[in-house]
Image 1 (cartoon, protein in one colour):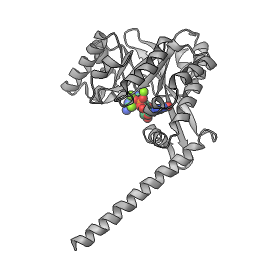
Image 2 (cartoon, rainbow, N blue to C red):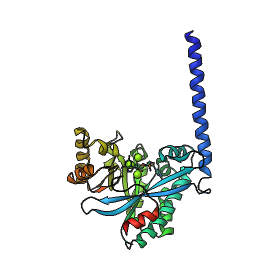
Image 3 (cartoon, protein in one colour):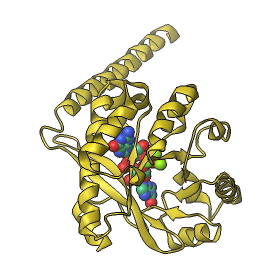
Image 4 (cartoon, rainbow, N blue to C red):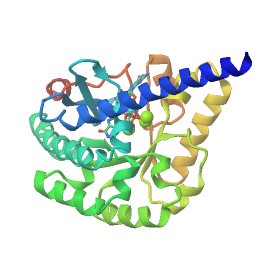
Length: 277
Ligand code: C2E
Ligand code: MG
Ligand code: MG
Ligand code: MG
């Protein structure tokens, strides 16, 4: 009896797995034509200086409106794009359009020499071909100032490949591009790469911010990350600030910048222009 049940179980799981694979393959296929069909758009989330209470930049976030499934979360389709090798074309497309948008946004806000653009970079983009040359080409082509570009990397992009990644980031940093570590605190790597890879700032993961008011351990970690980053000469952004209480607490602990729903949701370019005006 148990054997039969086991067999059925196996069949059930294998069918569920087939369906998951099928869905992924279908999504990947859909994603290939998504730019041309106008389904992909860019959203911009404002970043604020906590002390000066002032807009300092924005992070670009990719959005996919699927004709059948509605909005697909980036956590789902970015992974699909990475596994299917699509990120190598998607990544530079986002960078190019966002740089062009940012030039316009700064001009229309009357701040041509300020306001940074933060762009997420997948591990796979760093591994492929000549990432540094690609970024330089896009900066030159769009007229976006290198010093106002922030590249956001996760720890997984850096782990195991520190020497090569340091080299290509060093080349971009020599031109003024800033490098940030995203979702900081969630990896288990901790401080060791901060010595080996050149980094300008860290973004404290929103899971710490969400609990910082309630959980003393999360508050202690957040405070420690801020102190450590500052002692290494880095800037600190808190992500996922959803309440005034969190913002007050972070300001009190010396956090430099903040980003989150309480300050502003990701929004279309036109809304960002209206906001900074
Ligand atoms: P991320 O870079 O850590 O981006 C921050 C995420 O937190 C965004 O999710 C943003 O919408 C969300 N967020 C911002 N404020 C709040 C808040 O107050 N509360 C909560 N709960 N969430 C908040 P989103 O847009 O779903 O993106 C998820 C992830 O997908 C990003 O995490 C990033 O890793 C990746 N991603 C998005 N766009 C791109 C892209 O163009 N290229 C690459 N490589 N990755 C991207
Ligand atoms: Mg990010
Ligand atoms: Mg993040
Ligand atoms: Mg994230």
